[in-house]
Length: 58
Image (cartoon, rainbow, N blue to C red; front, top):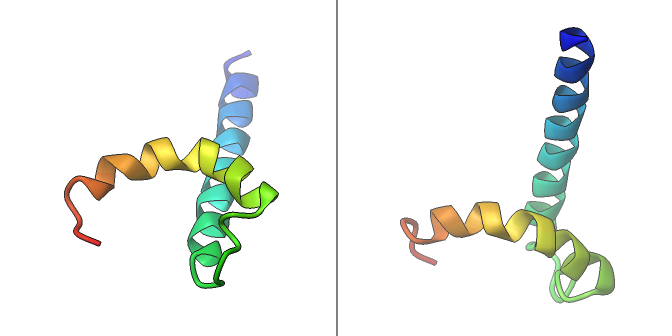
């Protein structure tokens, strides 16, 4: 049972990591973040990145 939970959590963290990498790569291409996919992705990764935006200047 615990192995199954660990496996599911591991996959979820891996998917979230890929989403963050995609969001970072999208910042290199103009206006890609403002596409429908970019806004969808931003809803998930922006709350995590907003923590670091307080400390790191733009």
